[in-house]
Length: 153
Picture 1 (cartoon, rainbow, N blue to C red):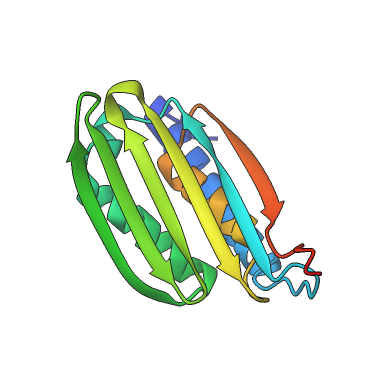
Picture 2: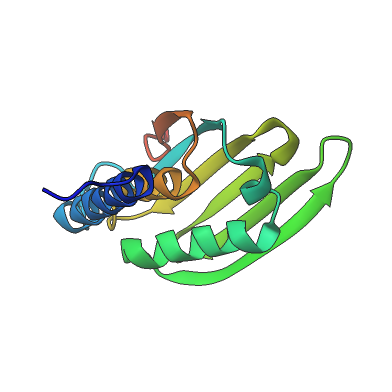
């Protein structure tokens, strides 16, 4: 067996993670749930590479690539260097029936991710997981809310 350098092992690990991510997307590409007309998935990402999230164009590309991989219909994406005391970066993608938004504070290596979808279609949890895999935070939290459970009387 040939000797593998640390760089080779890291590359192999990255390839394994990417293959696992693709397999999950293919396995659960579309989840039909007639009860949940409006799904809201959001969360916090901690320990993101500060240089990476400081670039509005890279954040825009991450959102667009993940949305396109999910089979959701991307309509438009905008990204902004919001600035301010903490130097925030924001990106929002409008998708058919919802949105994907990311608001990041590069100086803190922290971001909020928000995905809002309506109707049946690709599972927003898979999109959340894909974006997390692309941003590689040290840890993250995810929350789910069914916004369609409205009591109309």
